[in-house]
Length: 297
Image (cartoon, rainbow, N blue to C red; front, side, top):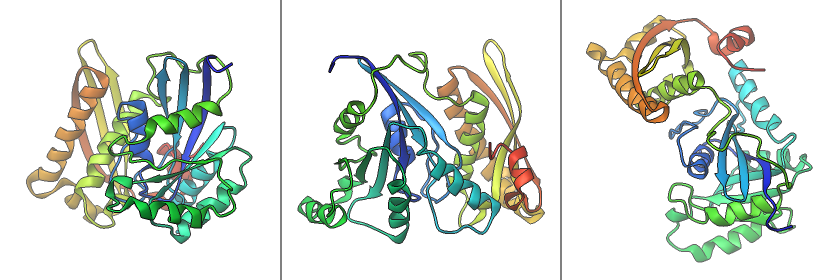
C-alpha cells in the first residue's frame, strides 16, 4: 500500500568530489559526514538516518572510487566503496552534471554488478548556465536505459531532493524503522569528533599533506555539561609536524577552534578539545596500522 511505513538503505557511490557527503548531510539535515574540496576526504562507510512521517531512509556515504591503488589506504578506500552496494535496496550513482570521466565509467562498471536498482543523480546543476544542454548529455550516457531513474540535483542548494527521496522511497520495503527516530547516524560521537578534526585539517592544509595524515581519538569522556576530547594527528614524517602546527601554533589553534565549535553544535554541550601531533612512518601503507587506527573491518 502507498501509505505503508517504509524503511530501507540507499548507498551513495561515485568518483571523488562529486558531492556525495554534501548530499548525505543535506538529506539528513545535519552534518554527519565531513566535506572538503579534496579527493579522499571521505574514508569510511557512514550511515546517515533521515526520518520522515512515512519512512526512515538510511543513506550510506562511501569513499570515492578512484584509480590510484598503490597504497594500503587506497586499496582500503576502494574496497569500502565497492562493498557498500551489497545488501542495500537502492544505489544512488552520483556524477557531476555535464562531466563524465574515466573514473565515472569505472563506477558504472562497478554498479552494473549490483542487483539493486540504480538511480543516476547528476549533481551541481546549479552551476549550469544553460540547462538545455543537460538532456542531450543524459541521453548520451543512458542510451540503453540502464538506470531506473535519472534525477538531476543540486546537493549544495537542496534542489530536487524531494524528487530523489520519492524515487528512493518507492524502492524501499514496507518495514519498521531500523533506528530510533532521534538517530542521525550509526557512528559514535567519538568517531565523529575525529572526523571533524580531520575535516578542518584537510581544509586548512594545501597539496598532498591531508592524504598523509589521520586523526585518532585517544580520549573521549562525556560529563554532565562538558565533553573532554583528546585527539592525536598522525603524520608520516617528523618534518610534517611543523606544517600541521603552523607558525606559533596558528594552524592547529584554528583547526581546534573550528572543530570544537562543530562538536559543540553536534553534541549539544561544551567541548574541551586538546590536539597533539605525532609522526608514525608509513602508517598509510601498513594494513595492521590502518586497522589499529580504525580503518578496515
